[in-house]
Image (cartoon, rainbow, N blue to C red):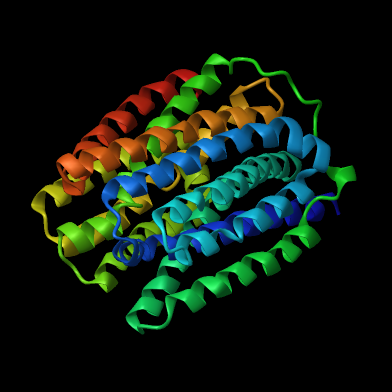
Length: 384
């Protein structure tokens, strides 16, 4: 019976993270359309990501230290989902850059609450059921954006009214909060420890967070900027541009759903270190070659090979720390997501001076360095 309760809580966390990322997947595929409508430049998108990250970081800390301990995990997930569900109003229905940028505030608040809470819930469910669940939870990240990208790509291909789509997304988010509430942990089952005072994270947690920071700071150039890169610089159609999201996240989704099996069959060092390194090398070669059809295939390969890098970091970090799970999750996510605060702003600035294509090549080299050094970290911190 207990296993069922905690597995249901994991499903509620998965739904809670799937829905906002489904909305975000639709938004990403519509970025070129929004750019044209509002006559924006690349730096505006960088500012959007930067503001979102700043708000998200603040509410990640508030979630781990105040919101979850006081409201419980179920109410926290519902609250975050309700707040995020209204972001399409500002993303698509705005007629000014200011309102477009304002969308980052409810998005950051909602996602900050959801991600910290859902990560903690998944960790508790793992401990109670003795199952590997972080890879499955992370798979719902990718599945959400994949389904959003497919939905948006089909919608744009059929040349239907995009305003109606985003109006529907608002109601989809609100209705989904009901399922999260029904499946979520009741407060008597919540394992919420006393809130700790802020202190500097332990060394191992800090190092794992730095790798999350580097990954999140650079992944936006690979993924979030890809539709704009294809449509503006590689001069593809909007349909092909939307396929960048589909290729990356279909690869990620497949790999993450197989993640638990792969980790059990091999180990976390091979799946989290050697496989991402191989994918980064292959992708760099493809990007240097320059054909956008090969780049689409490269995005799929990179999605498959790097998919379990983040969930493995989360698993190893939470297993290595003596902090309670809420505080450790908040610290890990906060420090890691600082990358989203700095990375997009840098990319937005440098893409105006050079190009998005230049950023993709530079970051491909950086990823090879990140995955190479992570091999050493995992070897020293674990007995794999």
